[in-house]
Length: 184
Image (tube, rainbow, N blue to C red):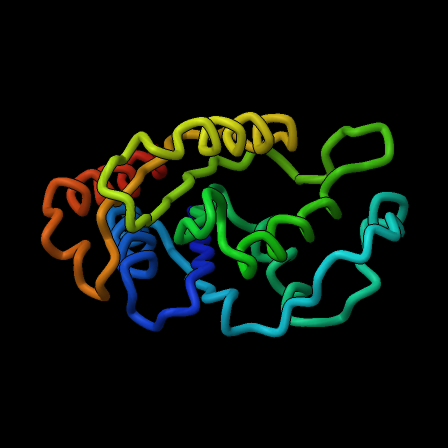
């Protein structure tokens, strides 16, 4: 079993990275192989909306997203982590999300080679974990429409400083439990 971690934060070893890696560590504890990508540090071009990929299944961009498409296809589940900027995922994560249109055919059926579990993992400075629930619910519906099996959304609220998440043992434990649940 393979679990793919996508981390959209530009901060190296920041709260989002720690949250995603805790989920992956939980999956590893149950025998899964994991792979972590820090997409904010990769060369991923924005979607141009040309829709060539919807017909062909191949993106016109040849950049660092190209191998991630194969990683998604070979994974059983995906963890997408992002800090919340201005009530939504940050720009680097949004660029990654937009490029997932490749997996949707013109008739809106899926190009995914089977069911893919999905975990959404968010960090946010706002201490109220429910402050952006409407947006998180929207993303769950979006990914369900895109044929991903949304398993869980986890939020680490009040994470403004680099290591704030380390003070949230309950969130980190839940992250590990989520990772473990991805292997069953």
